[in-house]
Image 1: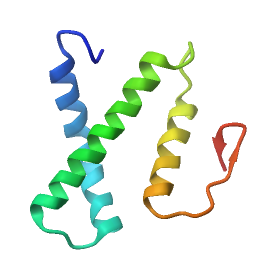
Image 2: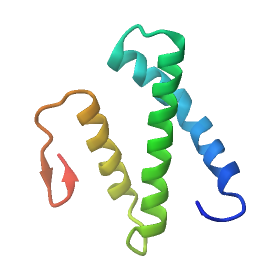
Image 3: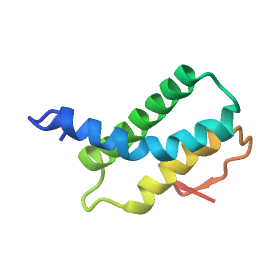
Image 4: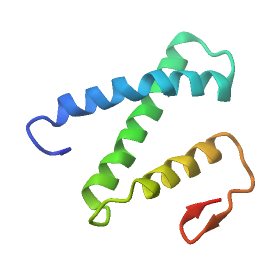
Amino acid sequence: MEAGSCAFAMTRALNSLFSSFQRQAVRKLFGELDQGTAEDLTTLLAGGTAAVINDWLIDGDDPIDPEELTDRLLRLVLVLAGSQHVRVEGGRVR
């Protein structure tokens, strides 16, 4: 997926999809930022989200487990939000 002929278009589509959610998260996590910094952080987080999804799709167990992806993304959100106590049991966030 990330190495095929449609990789660039797919990456742009995923970044666009996740940017709307990431933009809100950037505002909540970091407060008021100048426009350029806010957009750069949004792009960074959206691209990172897409990379985690690509990894899950390409290198994940067969069949892929949607709960595993959810747990991975949730762990990252909790770390970014400054949570000090992320409890993981059997690979799942609790």
